[in-house]
Amino acid sequence: MALKELMLQKYWHTRDLETRNNLIQEYLPLVRQLAGRMAYALPPQVDVDDLMASGVIGLMEALDRFNPELETSFKTFATWRVRGAMLDELRRLSWAPRSLFTRLRGLQAAEEKLGHELGREPSTTELALELGWATEEVELVYSQVNCQSLISLESLLFAPAVSAVEQEDEYLSCQSSHLSPPVHLEKKEQREVLANAIAELPEREKLILALYYKEELTLKEIGTVLKISTPRVSQLHARALCRIREKILKAGYLEK
Image (cartoon, rainbow, N blue to C red; front, side):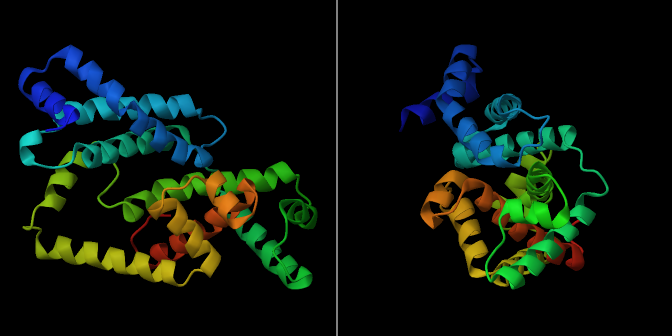
């Protein structure tokens, strides 16, 4: 049995604080990795350290609730709780003005217009000139969209549900083969809507999602692979999430 597993067994039976602190140190890299992957979507008022702090709280809750005798993976269990705690913090701190998606639609219209005129995808600077905005305004809209889309779509991209309060019950229910028929059917329908929405994306946007969510590359690493800038990756990622969000909204699985 691996050292971490032995430590988890010991903590479950003894609730020894030294063991708990050692486990927190062992799993801090996981918290740091998850915070780093969410950092691109942070609103201006949120610091990565704030996200890390909420993630550590989620990790501590995971340690207190995890039962190694259930023979489940602690890393998976902790990942859901840490991610859930971080998203709860983003929900608490982020605020999107009502005009956000109106501005986004204007931005998307400008992208389409310039794309036809230029025969290529327009740059952030070109979009800003077309709209009469500052470049920073264009980047802010993409940042806000990334944050809001991340919060609303995470539960579908990473089933089960992301609320830190609901993580354990949802996690356990998903390990059971005794899901009620209505719940099983709803989850199946959600996945089908999501899969269809992703399938209809342009190839490059599908590739970005695959590299980010499956291969777990950072936006900077994706930019290196695709030979485009990190802001451009963020822009394409935001666009992909918006397209998915719109389809899921129409299907009735998200609230506006």
